[in-house]
Image 1: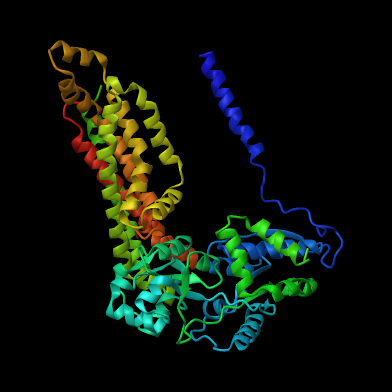
Image 2 (image 1 turned 135 degrees about the vertical axis):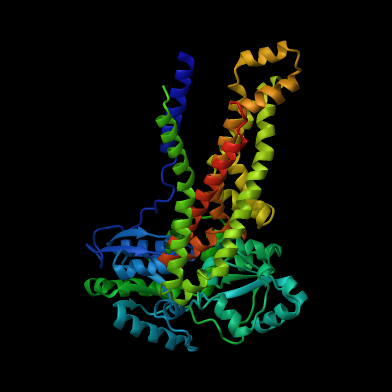
Length: 318
Length: 251
């Protein structure tokens, strides 16, 4: 009896002490900027983001960049679903997050037709959201993280499909070769599958369309099982890494989804320096840069905190 | 001193107990249908809560639960019986550890792992569900057999029964109540965990819940959850009836 008590005690203390070994591997390296001086000294900002890799990296980049200027930043990265983050910003639970112009236009401002001009899409969203919801959209980045349909490069050559119109034809003539995977959000959004099907006349039986979590889609398309084609994000690093090609949107169905940092106008009024602080970051965000950063997390397995920290250091932004 | 009054009131109590669960389940179902019919839903909510979408999701969910529970029974009960035999003393521990681990590991992790290693779809989801629900069935089978009074077994052996006959006519019938209780628990667990099957293309009520979460449509989220609860209550009720009628007479 005594021996089993001793063993039980040892087991419990090992369990408790394991907490020491598992200390946070995620704390950013001390930078020159977590000082109390700087343009944003004394500012309290809450930064949020959606749940996928690119958003997590951007959340950290924003937080670390603001901290480098002296702000006190609370992070709520990785909230599930675009609409959840948006509601959090409108209600004031978070102050800022990176959003895509097309998503704002279709999902939040509830329009049904995208604007086919990149610059105009941004200015229209910016003006309307400011007027209606007092949310400011800072000048956009070059990166366009549009929804896209991807397929393995060899399969694309084999089937002779390079555009979405050709994919629609394939779905009508040979649905078994045109199987599709998407995530729940893509199937629910008006600028997602329902709109795509209508715009291109895609016709697939229920068994030819699979719903997966976002992550496994890339792997599934790479393997060709359970789908040859899948919904991807254009800036994802796994497209190149897994040998996938993106089909051309020849009817320009998808809106432009340029990255723009949205901020509650009242926070921007209190701390206008946020604009100038984040401007150099925005300038550097091209589709290629984001693909590289995303690949470092998704393919190389680094943490978003480490990737953000390294990138800011490389560009002398912290 | 059970008087007639006592017997009648306990019978009355038993019969309300019998109808309460399905009544709640039907009430939830009716409430959901009325809401969908009369509420002002936007295009996204209407698409997610279309009648054929709900029926398809419920059918997939029931299919997952029934098949995985049958598989769990077919694996768990014989395995449990095997582990109580004399020669199996050594492997009992590791097998139970595996079953406990199977329930402790997050099912979503198992599902995605199976999807990457093998494939997505119905059978991988069933595999993940079996892994999750194995523990109650396995452990209850083992305990059920082990708690049989030794004197009864000795009496059987004394009457000339072989070990196999003892198992069939004494140990198993006496263990049935506990085994059924374990199966009932496994069924309820499976209804809950089957909501994760949506992440690897096995459908189920989880797709309605997930749509509600990612698109931030509260009605869709709540309805998906309510339907899952209603299904769980219905399954529990059916399992309770099964338990009552499969219990060997004379116990």
